[in-house]
Image 1 (spheres, rainbow, N blue to C red):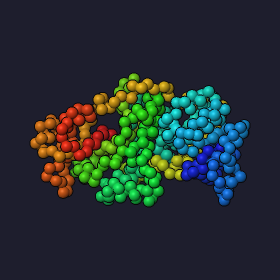
Image 2: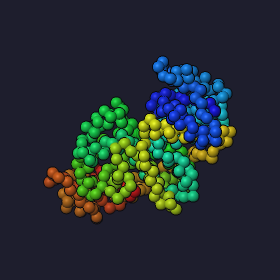
Image 3: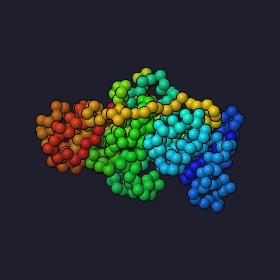
Image 4: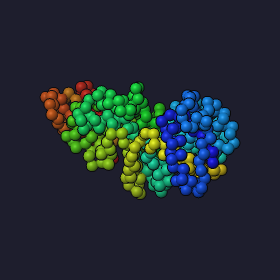
Length: 405
């Protein structure tokens, strides 16, 4: 069966490598059908590449080749990936992708295009890289009402926080190290401000609860305000700080979804996730908590998920998988600040007596070198709006959510 790859960057070249190095295994998994690379689309030239005869700069070569049945889209971004993907799907060619931005923004439209073309649009690699989560969420949890999802969804931020926690490294120094090691881009905004995790939350929420969630609906906060002082205080409470994407079921007509730093206590499976690794914890009403852990990015881990989707498509030629979600409404994702009660970590310029006057129950924290006019504590459960009302007029240095996962 002939296939094509659009985009020959890190993931795209990995897809080609996995297909060639695992040809025997792939044939076993497809029932004897080999995946043969017919075209590789990229605007750059690769004169020394062993696949140079497969390269094209013309999308029409893929679209108009009747023998090409499956296409891997590893271009990234929304355009021209969206236009190319729509045209391929409507032409009856299956498309698989690792492009989380495209799925988060345009997933509903692309699933409709796949239905129109009687083909499949799969995107296991768009969340968690090589970690299997899309299929388990849609198949293995099919008999559950999903109560919530919490995930460490970005390896760059997890690497930075690990260095801050374990090596007392400042945020700035940890970021520079992440860039030096190739974990962070020259412009790390999408990672450290939480946008990358937000896109993955949208995909998970759409799948888990059946309605499309857009990035604009997900309140997103990054890790740029986390300091070593916060890390030290939280450590005294037997916890660590992680950037979490969280999704919570409210009722049949609404969910909460947000990305933010969170205090995770050491007993949690998420607390031990270090460096660039990712983890996604799904809470079902029948199965309880199930955690998926592994490399959330990287050439071969992500490529393995892309090729797995290609194998799935090869087994479902001219057959559509029951897969996807419906339209979402503007008020479907509620303001978590009004609806969700949780404890909060607070660091402020307040006296302990003042804190006791404002809050009914708190747990005070400590750190080495703590200034006499600085206090840190964990509150009891309340909404964020209630917390901000209580802290009105106070000199607050930082606030971090405390998770129950």
